[in-house]
Length: 58
Image (cartoon, rainbow, N blue to C red; front, top):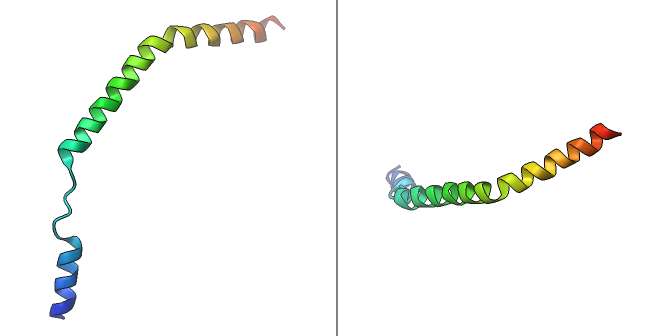
């Protein structure tokens, strides 16, 4: 039983993860999405409007 307990503690022990790293990755991803959306948003809106106009004109 002691061996089983030790193996479980070794398996579940120190793995807490890298929280600051994940926060940094999340913030950087959100920043990239905002920048890309800001640059490509008007162009994508124009393409969408043009497609709707073509479909509506038929």
